[in-house]
Length: 165
Image 1 (cartoon, rainbow, N blue to C red):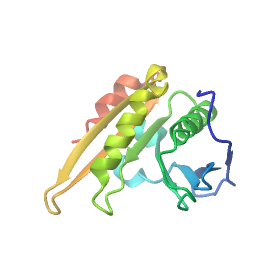
Image 2: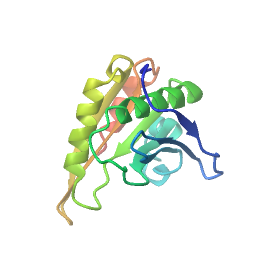
Image 3: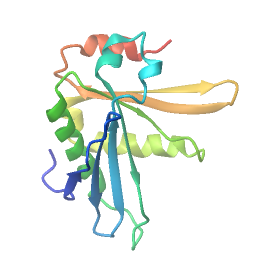
Image 4: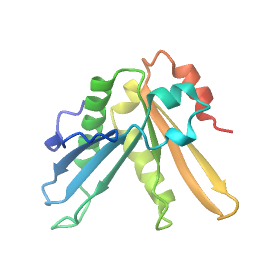
């Protein structure tokens, strides 16, 4: 877990399988990191490891920073929250992510997330795979993938299931 990061706190757990954390940056931006157990349920019934242990993971900025600019503590803070969530939920947990494509900036988000992951300590203990898929009807490319501990006893099955057909 990174030594230097913003303080964060869990929000009240909701009954719908949503667990969220919030942090406030030095620029007064408020970030939410969320984990949703039920978000992909209807899509994963053919994939037992992803269905039973897959959790949607995402984050967003709730408010614009007072002084915009690159904040080097946001990545380590999200990393610390991931560590805490995995610690609380076990090594079989699989975090599933899908870059938001509502504003056609999903490739930028994927690149930013990839760069952040590659610079983080997560790669030492966690496996990350990402995939691109273009939906022919809309011609929109989606960037998605998973992060799971390398100690996940089902990691080979997770990899097989993640290569969705």
